[in-house]
Image 1 (spheres, helix red, strand yellow):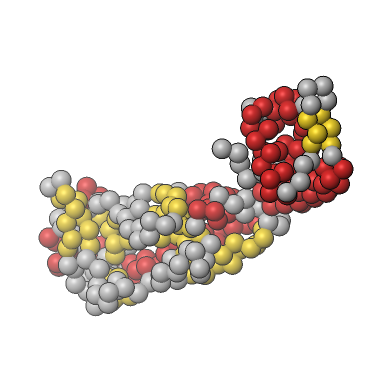
Image 2 (tube, rainbow, N blue to C red):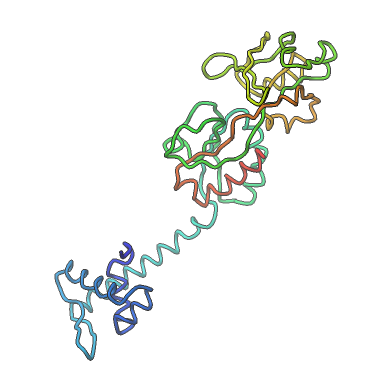
Length: 293
């Protein structure tokens, strides 16, 4: 089947320039029959003959000569249009609307200087929220942690995660080191308030499966970074995703029960198919992968 671009205009010009249907077919990379059918269809649509065909020569009719000039101008305009948009296909320009959850925001912002220095024509509109934003209507790229809700979207996996359980040396010196999962019942645990309004249960690997443990403590927060701040301050033990800890490694938090560390939810970048393939978004995706690696 002929493509939309090969609609009769190009075949007509190629036939005239090449002097034959065979030469036009070779130039366009299609069969001679395809060229002949395309020109014949164009003549039917216009209601006039464009070419005079005989066994010895192939020439334009008067109407064909007039139409050919319009065809040449149209093809030239199309070529100019392709040239004009070429930079948008090959370079990162324009604004990209990026949405990230609170626990990833600090790392993403820290990775932006190199991105924006390399792509001077690129700008980022960053929205930090744990709410779901539609990656088609409300944002261009959304970083999501956990299950993927919409099959219409293209997802790029940025990383796997694991849950790490942490406490400060000061807290452990004061309260002791829990050696088992059950021992956490005797400790002050800093909990995260999940979107459903309930404190998140902690996840551990035990007996070849992941178990959810309801822990107790005086402090419940709705932002993951506050868990790290509370643990660093000696308020208690926290459990967070591993990539949250890495920029704060100098904070002195110690990992507890590493033999029971459970796999966490994957991190993906989501967006509409066309948007995720655009020249502006590709370096943003590379930045996200590096920032959260």
